[in-house]
Length: 492
Image (cartoon, rainbow, N blue to C red; front, side, top):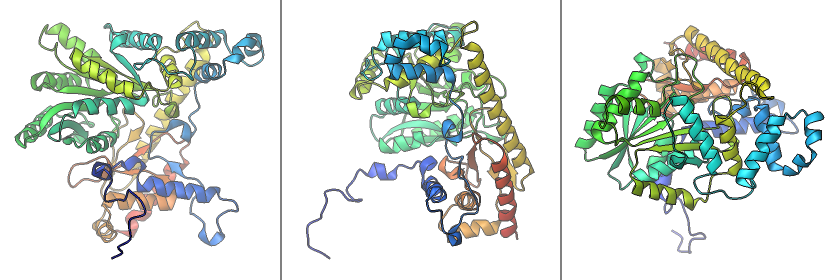
């Protein structure tokens, strides 16, 4: 062994162990390999003929990143942003209106937002620009039929930032537990690992369109408590990620009733609330207010944090990092600590805050930009629904594949039944069977998905998650062809 002094302070053995423990499958090894393939396809000179790939394009179906997959931004939003980023353009209003296709409501919205925030290059109040929070409050009131307080709304750098804030506040010590739906978006388990907080999994019911099973939640809760876990909160993703399921009004009510009994903070991740193809979105805020109205006093102390984002839906502005969370029923002293925590980061991106304002307050009927906005919005929604249906139908025809009918969000999460020989091959390669399938799929087709093991799944089941954001349906055919060849290769 060398006796020389180490060349650096940090090595893999002395960094924060919780960072090493955290896993984030959505951008894991599969995603890294897909980006290497993308680089090879784009290389100049082209990849040598003896090293060509069996596909000409990588489809990043592993992550809900709409504009990477050619979803067009909403014109009204981007025109307003252009004026916010370069206000000098407002000095030539006639040129904007008569030559560049801007409408008067675009100019008016940009002037108003600049008046409220002064400049998108300046810090805002830690909680976010007040006028924008007032717009969010009005949106919530109109959606739910109950008042909302702008002082209880925090603008954030996407919903992920809000999740990070709330889990930091909740996580008192290593015995603290947070209930998380399985399958789940790995943001939650990864953040809990970083905080050295216990994840308490509860399983969604695939046989009931991935709905919540309140008896299963109670069983998981009691088991965790018996093991010494101080369960503080329950996470609900509605509509679901990765499942795409929309919770019924009764599901929402049941979770809130359990939270009241057990004194659990409810974290309602509602970023896909406009991506609903079947049924209707039911917000937890409305569910709570309905319960409080029907049973005065009984539900007054429920702590609810509701999150929303500009990253999904028909907005799809992931890269601008905007979102909000609303607090309901929290102790004022806890709220002070939440404010302090968000203040450490100064504020969320102000340009993202402005996009939040436009998301919750888009052009209305009669406004000059309304017809174009509505046509763009409807076109995006219809395209998502059509691709979801095409993918669902393809899965129905594939051997050993079962899939719930698409209800919402941006994903399908089919079950796959693989031959025993494929399971054995996965063991030889040191991978889980669904990982083997996903890697083979990527290598053969360029379609990057995420194995179900990255989200959690019931023992003995296998899944993968795919978005349906990519344009066209040609890539769906690639999956169908690959699956047949895979099953034939490992058939008994």
